[in-house]
Image 1 (spheres, rainbow, N blue to C red):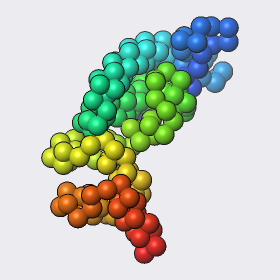
Image 2 (cartoon, rainbow, N blue to C red; image 1 turned 45 degrees about the vertical axis):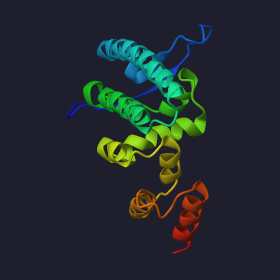
Image 3 (cartoon, helix red, strand yellow; image 1 turned 90 degrees about the vertical axis):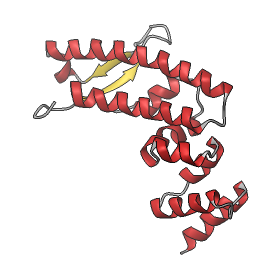
Length: 176
């Protein structure tokens, strides 16, 4: 979509519709263009298919809640979907988290951690580490990338073993 304008959209349930019906909504100026309507309908179908796929992934995660690799795959898939909408169709979803909270069976905090996972770690790091999801949740609270990596090294070396030790490391890192 190089050279094209980005169209801001929101994912909503239309007034009076069933709660599971989702529509991509744009401002009036964008809506009057026929090509925008076609893009929106295409994006809506892709979103609905993706939500079904993400719910299946969440089912696998519920069966193996400590599996950080499954969580990373979900994180990557969601991020790739929204990035593709922007890159391929020029649609920028402005309420991603709100829509996902409505459409997926995840808590607000669990969704936030999940979405950050693939942005902060690559799949090889997660696989090699063998760490459970709970450890990655704690690591994701460390905003500074270098501090997070140092903490992960200490965990992998066995020098930090508990959630409380990770949090203590976090508190000490904030003070510096």
